[in-house]
Structure formats: structure tokens, C-alpha cells
Amino acid sequence: MIAPAMLVAAVFLLGVITLWKRRSPGYLREIPAFVRLARAVGLSIEDGKRLHVSLGHGGLFEARGGPALAGLALLRNIAERTSVSDMPSVATAGDSTLGLLTQDTLQAGYQAAGVGEAYVHTMGRISGLTPFSYAAGAMHVAHNENVSTNILLGHFGPEAGLLAESSERAKATLIGATDDLAGQSVLFASAQDALIGEELFAAGAYLDARPAHLASLTVQDIFRWTIILALIGGSAAKFIGVF
Image (cartoon, rainbow, N blue to C red; front, side, top):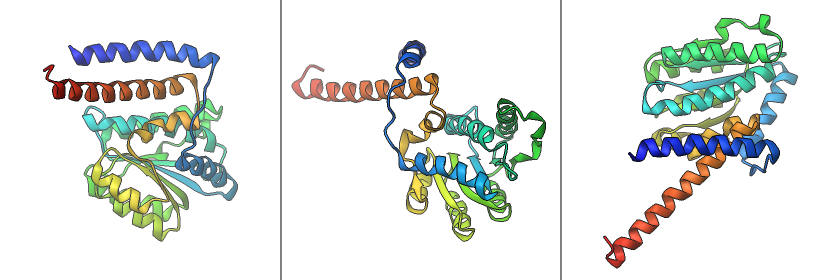
């Protein structure tokens, strides 16, 4: 009963807060990785270089598919912004379903920019179906296609170290986030700006601050503090002998 109740509460809060954010957008705290990312998008267009968005190998029908959905939201915004560039952004995925959604998301970004005819389906690619084959394919893109910034946003394990090494050799900026602890440790040590924990789910809000995106962050905060207070309350009740 708890999970359905939380789902209903989340949907209700998301709807109410979205309406509220349309009237009062609110304020987002500064996160260095997103500041660097916004700058990288503009510089890539000016310098005639690509952005490479790597969405990991998490299946959308698995628990680890959440970060990939956050990556798709970011990809659409990047595709729309860089559609006018001579070197449009490319995206790689390590799952067949995610690969199809990558192509669809890129196309949606081009259509939103009014240049749908410029979209080429090879901009979204499946670079491998196992973690290390995926990393090998993504490394080839990062190293050989004039990429200025590699954005890793999805499910990555230790293979993130290979992508970090490839970025270092190509002298490209690396911005990364993952839900995997091993991947997080690698990215924290190697990326110029790493996103920690739930920060990866804020990517869409920071690059495209629409009311729904802002509302999703507020709902995250509400549930986070609810869980924290429940844990503290439960511990206190256990300590004084209520349970």
C-alpha cells in the first residue's frame, strides 16, 4: 500500500506545484557542473565542435533506467540548442530500446528548433550492448569525431573510467553523473565537474527551466525530507520504547 500511495501523492504534488511554478518560477541553486555545461553548449557552436551525450547501458524497463530518462530530457534540450551548428551533437546508448528513444529525442529537438529536415538518424547510435563494448564504441565517438565535451548521464559502472580516459586524451571536457556507486567514484575522481546523487535528475530543470521541471525538483525535496523525518522519528520512537 505504501508504494501506490507514494505514487499517487507524487502525481498530485507534481500537478499542484507545476501550476504554482507557472506563477512563481522560484530559484535554483548554482551547481558548477550545469554552469560548465551551459557554457560548453555555446562554445561548441562557436568553435564548430560536437557535444557527445552518452546515456549509459541501463534498460528502461529496469530499476536502473531512471538516469537514462533524465539523460533523454537533457539530450532533447541540447539537440534543440545545437541544431544550428555545423557539427551537431551525437548521442550513444548501450540498450536497444534506449537507442531508439535517443534517435526519437534528437529528432524532437530538431523539430522544436524548426529544422526537422536537418536531422540525420545516425546522430543517435547504439555503440554496444554490453557495458564494455558500449564503452568501446562511445570512446571511438569521443576520440574521433571532433568532440569538445563528453556528457555522461545514465547508468555507468567501472567502465566510466575508460570514457574518462578517452576524454582526457582528446583534451575534452567531461561532465558525468550515474546512479552506480562504482561509476560515481570514478567520475568524481576524473570529471571536471561531477554530479552527485540525485543531482543527475535536475539536468532538465537547469538547462530548460520549465514549470514541470522545477516542480519535479520540489517534489524530490518534499519526499527526501519526508523520508529523513520518518527515519529520525522511527529511531526516536524505538529509543524511547514506543515500538
